Length: 270
Picture (spheres, rainbow, N blue to C red):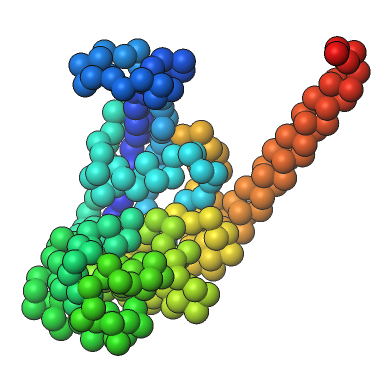
């Protein structure tokens, strides 16, 4: 089966403020010139990561916060560029990242559907044809012509997801959006992702919902400290990830216990 995504020995480096510097502590208001001249250290968000996704496959990516998962999606959708390596995409890409970030608070829900859809690459005629389905999916029909600044946070993200979820794309990038809204809407989001999968879309899904990852994905990557730690069948990788989390928690608890015991052994100075 042909490939839709190739992530070939990709690394991503950022320069971050050195610990203890004014830029890192924020202790002083720095001029732009001084900020640029502040000492910087390299931070590798990804190191030599490689994977490929077959056409129509659903790949899950799991890992702790800061492991490098979202960096992968930002590279795939062109928000940032790799420091090393090559990324090849074969098809129209849609990204469900930072849902609702393109909304204008003074515009109504209807106006924001057209605005957001246009920013995501949809034509006005396409948006108009899908408007009823988008509104029904979001469940905001009574508030469609109300400015979104009056929406609850749940209504806001539901509408954002509904717009993005109705894109016609060959490659869909999904970052943690299955956690938006209430439980009923989360189930609707998951059902939509499964529907897109049945239609043959290639999906890359990042989520902390390990049960959803097992249910939807055909293959899973575990990312740790910017590297691929495990890759394979969902149940196997999720089990391995949970075992690592339990071991890390036990090690942390043991460290705390040793620290407290050492503190009790030290003489008390008054």
